[in-house]
Amino acid sequence: MTTEEREVNTSKSSKNAYVKNKKPKFRRQESWRYKRVTDRWRRPHGIDSKMRKKVKGWPASPTVGYQSPKATRGLHPSGYVETRVFNVEDLAGIDPEIQAVRVAHTVGAKKRFEIIATAEEKGIHVLNSRKTREDIEEKENGDED
Image (cartoon, rainbow, N blue to C red):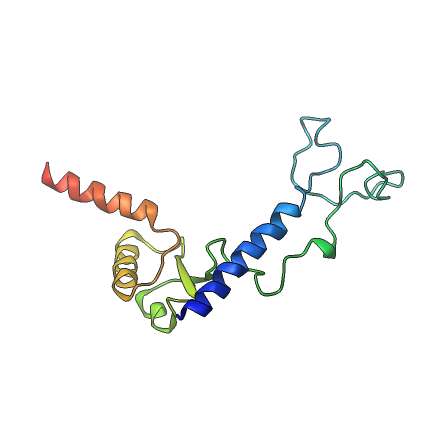
């Protein structure tokens, strides 16, 4: 990746971060009032609902105007395009400059170790490798005892 492409990649993620900072946290109506009502967004439907009517002073509802820029939409916060990997062969078509991989949760420990080792050899960023690395270190330390 050239320095220009790297700058574009970082500017995308910073632009995305800027847009996300301006976006409010959309909360479910009355979730601040009742403990039984979760914060998770649900669209208000009531006939007298202030939120549905967009009354001034009530929280904002998600609209198309809050959408992130097309260039950054769907990117991982690190700026990489996320790709799910199920086996070592899936790493063949990965571009390490643009893409990062996430090992699928259905993959077992043995194959997961192989995938991560191959990815590190190829210089591919693995997004969910932290826990696996800790497991590897524990196994190595456990064998020495």
